[in-house]
Each structure stands twice: as C-alpha cells, then as structure tokens.
Length: 312
Image (cartoon, rainbow, N blue to C red):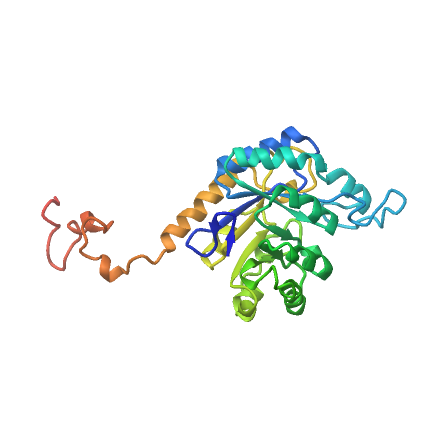
C-alpha cells in the first residue's frame, strides 16, 4: 500500500501529525503546526474538513449539550463552529506542507468535503472513528480510488468488517491494498492503561482478509504508548500536535508539543532500527566491522583468567 511516495510495511512507520482544532482558527498558528510537524520528522500533516452544517447542525438546531470530557457543556453546533478549519485555508496549507516537504491530507465528514478536497490531489483520505458506520461516505471516498485510512474507535468487529466491505464494493477504482485500519480508543484523553493493545481486534488476525496494514491512532499524552504500538507491528502512527498546551484548544489535553513530538518520532525510529531483522546474532558474532561488541569482547573475563590483552 502506497500513500504518496511512502510504501507501508517496508520497515519504516508512517507518522501522521494530527492538527485537528489546535489551529484555534488562527491561520498563522496552523502554519506553525505544519512547520513543527516537518521539523519533528513527521511524514504527514492531517487536517479535518467540515463545518457545523456539513456535520448536520445549524444555529437553530444546536443539539444537546455534551455532558462530559474536555468538551463538557458545549453543544455540537457551538463546538464545531469554534473548532472547524475555514475551508479557504486548505489551498495555502496544502501548499505550505509541500514547501516543507511533508504530505498533507484530511478527514472529510461528508461527500461535499470529499468533492472539495479532490482539487488538492490528496495522497489519501482518513475516515474518523465517529464516521466508521457512515457506509455511504465510505463508499463515496472509496470511489475516488485513493488510499483510505479508517479509525476503529468504539467499533465492533462487525462494524469494522462492514466498513471495509463497503469500501470494497467499489472495486472498479478501489482494492483492498488501499485500505489501512487504525486501532483507536475514542476517549479524550486516553490513559496508557486504556490503550488496550492486548484486546486489539487487529492482533487476532481476523482482519487480514480485508487489510494487511494496521496502525494506531493515539489519544494518550504518552510517548511510550505509540512506540510500543510500533514494536507490536503498527505501520501507521497518528498523534495530535499542538504548538503549546498553554494555548486553550479543545484537543490540548491529548496533544504533544513540538519537542515531545520530535522525541516520539526519534524513539519510533530507534525502535525500528533496534527491531529490524537484517542479520542474525549468530551471523554477527565475529564480524569485527559490524559487530558492536567486537572491541569490548577482548576485555571480558574467562573462568580463572584475568582480563584480555589490553586489560589491567
């Protein structure tokens, strides 16, 4: 599966910096987040494309107030109105990401957003966990023939299968190699104890008939949790990025700051190097140039003997 020029499953994880609403409706802040993502080593920056109206809400139909979590007390209309990214930003932000050398793509929440995004030739589309059961939207996105990444927060096994089968129905322009699935816990923020790796549907192997590529969409404030996901085999990591948690945004409680994001990226890359299977231990022994322990081996003790040639 290829996303732009990035091929999944080739030893290097695809790392997505999620902007979400951390732009705080300030385009200069959005530029800063793209810059921070590029400098931290992310492979892509992801936006969200919606308005209150495309989410099904108007000022006269605000919906019930949210009862808990970081958005407590907000009606859906007020939340989406305060958090959405103005659509005219997409053109300059896509261009800025290209200038910074990272891919840009977005999560559409309805078919009008898909049609709008097509003009930017995005390398893929993301289906959010809350839209995983919107099979009409999934079929429409699949019809565009681009790779698709689907998050599975809240979903049952049957709902994930239904989503992937809906995508596969448009096989004239979409095939199974273009779908990747992200394990996700739709709790904001998520504690590391709730990441539930042992309960991942993807670990059981039932999904292999639908998609060979899986990853992790992380809502913890941890660096170690996404690294653990990579070691377990995730080929995509998605993580929220903010310029500063001091900026009061709706997602700040589960967003990394730039320095933290950079540490996470480097830790994932270190884990990939340490976990690679390019040579066996037996083959490495005795290869002086490639063996990191070759020099040290001369100083180890043998039973009943002193140190090596150069030892005290």
